[in-house]
Amino acid sequence: MTAAIVIPARYGSTRLEGKPLRDIAGIPMISWVAQNCMKSKARRVIVVTDDQRIFDECVKIEGLEVTLSDPNIPSGTDRVAKVAQYLKDDIIINVQGDEPFIDPDLINQLIDDFERSDALMNTASVEIDEVTAQNPNVVKVVKDSEGYGLYFSRSPIPYYRDSDVPKRYFKHIGIYGYRRGFLKVFTGLTPGFLEQAEKLEQLRVLENGYKIRVIDTSYNGIAVDTEDDLILANKYAKGLLNG
Image (tube, rainbow, N blue to C red):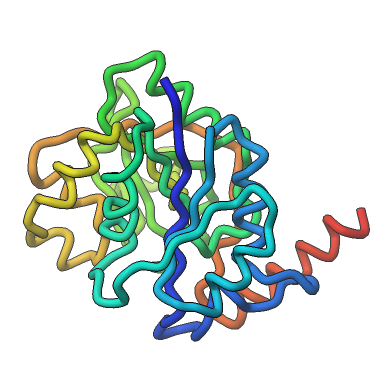
């Protein structure tokens, strides 16, 4: 069983234009993402982008593969699926291009999970505090007793009716693993009401009756969506480099 990582990296962003090329401690963000992915057990790492500038930056990284895609492809998952149709790997890991500090061990956990289970798709979550759970930009997840996702939401879930019940919230980490055949199934599904309401692609899977395994992790990285996130990422990166 082999695995490939595909990193969708789109130049346009409503909140942070040119995000993959934004500087983090003197290094473009896409380079941070790719270099960390290349430390995992995946057989190959491929960046798929709609922009020549991102392409040109990626070809500087030895061992990294990069390809240009149609800018009109509607989502990152669709971009990953377009690449996956040319791959022979059993497992496709979708790492978001705005996760500069993605943990290679977490990637390995997702790959290992496919070898131990019959899951079609998996992802990860980490426990967070109540204050963080109130942020709609932080996606929360609740799981069943077997570790499969029941629901993902921008709202703090579950709702605690009684104040004396200890509160626990879990943040969804934006990384996805797919069995290659299921990735094609997923992109062929029609977006439903819940996905359109929350603007969360993974809800399409649940709405159509499929399951997503959610792996527990201690990794709680910085997803860079705004200028404030970029400032935080720079502080964190400088600590790593000086550390």
